[in-house]
Length: 211
Image 1 (tube, rainbow, N blue to C red):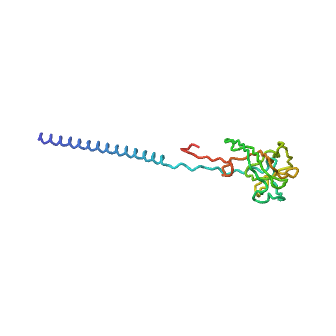
Image 2: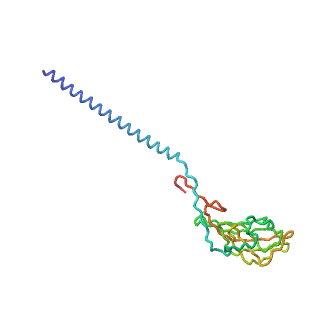
Image 3: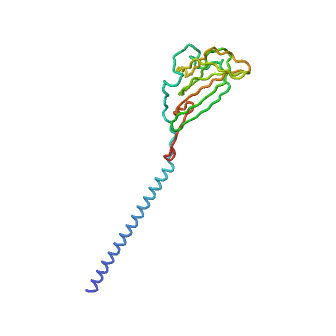
């Protein structure tokens, strides 16, 4: 009888040992599975971030300059060839001296341009295209010849918006330029870096959330 009871106890202890081994194995397998799952999840997330496409360059919406600025006010004067879309053939520009000063903090730029041109027929007016920019001072006009530079008096200037012109009117009619002669029209101006893809503009883009 004692031998039989001893065998039963030994068998009971043996079964409990097997249970413990099984439980340990399940815990180990579960831990490994969870670890692999977390690792693969992090790797996939990292891979997606690496292959995430860089956002396309962004362009801010255009800002229209105010109408009431500078000496060349908008006008509906149509008594001239500036009512035509194309510049006239008798004005022949051949050289530009351009200076620009952009301010990237305020998105404003200022500048000056001196246009050297010839006239093949008399005219009291000179005009050129302008858009989203305005003249900040009364234009300066000079005549260059063999004897040097001569100032030409300017009566007024105005913008003709239907064709996007700025028109400069001299006090007297401008004569045809001869050999070694030409006019120099100088304009001071201001504009906006508005990102409208017109003229002088600025665009920005982000790379890894940095502008």
